[in-house]
Image (cartoon, rainbow over all chains, first blue to last red; front, side, top):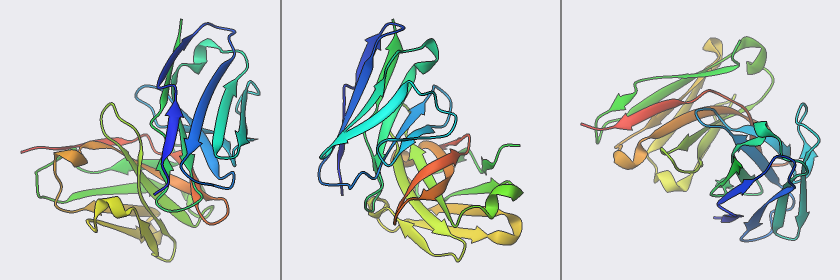
Length: 107
Length: 121
């Protein structure tokens, strides 16, 4: 199985801050990575697929990038509505696997 | 209209079978060939359970050790999940989702709202 390691596990930031979440794959996944946002009591919502493709309707302050097996989700200017837990997911091979999550709190 | 909606018992006894159904809105059922189940234990992360296509072909996560079966009823616009011999470790919120195929495998969009299943006597 491909292991997805996310960091940090939690972060606290202020409105307007630039926030970066990292996800490292245990082997090459050929850019086949999605990012999700999950708010308490809700289902996850996809933000980005294929490492850097922004889903329709997702604010442009969200972006994704990759360098080898390391993937990054960046929020350029954190907004109050961006609280929640963020997950990465690889879909290069089965079983499909998720990172452990990064909880984002607004200071 | 919510495009996907899970339903089923919220409480299952240990060693029993967990059975859930996902109803898909009419305008969604024809828009994808693959449909998935994902679960999330309380306070924990996400685990892919498996997927099924319109032909009934299924792929399962080996971590479930052969306890999982999925089925699809196209005439009813729904697909189902069975997990046998459940234990407390199967207690989770279960989500159904459309599998967006990108290459060979998929990411998930949209998701149902999820349903909590508790395994307890």
